Image 1 (cartoon, rainbow, N blue to C red):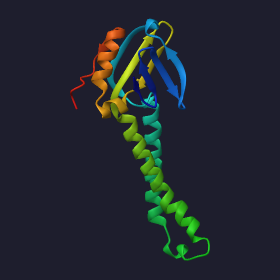
Image 2: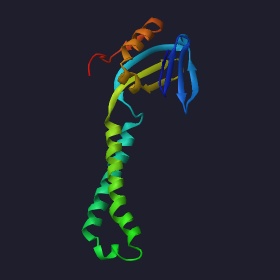
Image 3: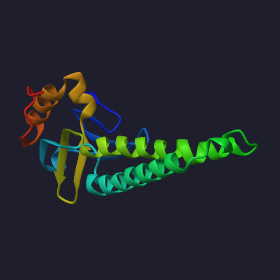
Image 4: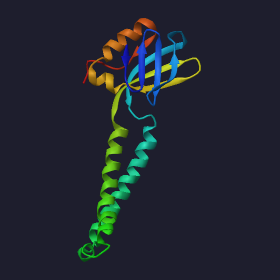
Length: 156
């Protein structure tokens, strides 16, 4: 049995997990084919990349403008701490958060694509890739259903 936060693969079938509960069970007889490929870990990575680029740009422009026009005398005033937090720290936190989101959008990992009669599922296999169980999963699934392995398991 192979288990991650997103999927559980055993001899009975494949369980899709969401919020630590089994969302859907797929029996091996329902599966047309399974493909293991290298793909993006985020399902809608283009939208995620666009939003993260926008947030990073806004954070950068806002941070540079705030640093240029900041007045150090305001910091010592009664309401200065809130202004420092809002004008000097928040834009750079937005910039760093957007930059990390860009990294997550562009990162690639092993992905399993399950095609059934009615639906198609795409699940990241980051945990199995890190633990080195990807070749075991490929062998296990190839015995039970048609497997298309486009991912080079030994390649790092």
